[in-house]
Image (cartoon, rainbow, N blue to C red; front, side, top):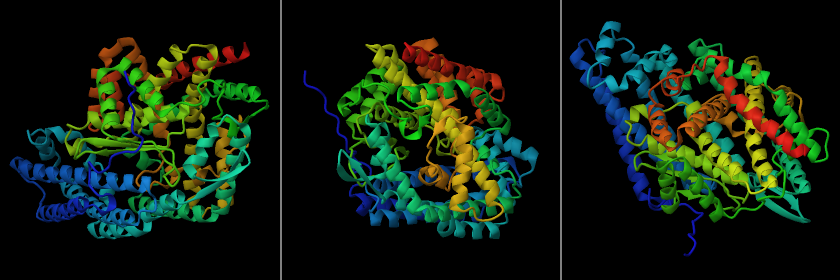
Length: 598
């Protein structure tokens, strides 16, 4: 039987033929503009409902909102893919600007709808939500009523929307464009190579410490050269955001992210409290690995270093087969979906220069597809990235029949399906390891995930919180940003990391995402939540997949605490929930130290 070959370059023409010059895409954008205009007209004539039979008027607006969101997402995802595969695609950059303008018009009009709905008499509001045409949107509509942005007048909202296009989102887009065009000069075996940021970062897991170190310092030199520019971008993004908060009367810089994650601050505090209490075992892991590498303390450029020479190079075809095989052991739907993604060209994995540095998954809700973007370098880390992004795609698949109003799930849940998919691969691979070295290699990769979520992500959270507090008082210099980063890393890693990248604030793209501040703690949440889901999956076997799909489908129409209570029966405001997840990871540390000591 001949081996199956998997293409490494995705198929975008099945979405819109012709890339950034696509006439289909232009038609789609023109249709969007017409739809937005109709939505604006409907909104302008929409008055505060006075009777229960006016629920149909609200339902009509909801249909517009769902359709427009779907169409914007379809176009925006396509343009994101174009710029990822070719950051210098000028036409795609122009189209991105158009979609940003359209989305700003949409969000502004949506705010007007919210402002009208919030004026409805409370008793009538409850009656409206229980009508047949609105009951499925009860959670979202109640969320709208509590939207903090409704404090602004229409005039203020209009001004804010105009400013966001060129004075806010533009900074985030400039960051991505600038980062994607940076080339890193790295000496490998005496030969100088020009690499993209993504390719240079991939060298973190190179088997040679000399190469890892060379790449680390080449990247650091680049960040130092451009530190002032990046500091300006970051300060402008934060400054704009803080002005918006001031208009809304918000003083807590974390509040917006909590609202977007549909999470209580009590939940976040419980999670970080438990993580802070249980850092010693993971510091022990880092110290043990440093000792193996011949150092007293873990060098940052050695963190991703392979612990053994097992499985150093994995061919793409083997990686795909590996993922499909182990997905199949969890559930038939996940395996079937993933096979479809590979066979229909949904994956871009080719290792080449001039690509974006960031792996991602984009959903296309109109055509009910996804696209996965990454650079496959042949390591187990790349296999895990592939599984991670396929998890995101599977979440999109689960949501494809859900109305556009209920599709938007919070960031913390967005990282659950992806992390869950990673765990499937790692857990089964460790069980099937054919030697101690292979088991140790995989166990090390699993523990890296724990350190990233309990230490690295914590340091990112600490940095961002401190930075925003200081930004309230004025511009924060690049040198001060380095100092804040050092303080955050020392606390986040419990002092167990040597020679860290103090310019992490430059190359961590999450700090520059204008749509979502504090895009860090959702990863830790998703990781620990996925651990709980995975424990349930192992207990129930393939029968768990149906429950898992239901959880994913509910993820856009429930608050996070209620979602977990409904599907796991757990109170996530309690430290006890988070402790159970971390204790599972501590067992991995014990096993790692046992194997490496012997």
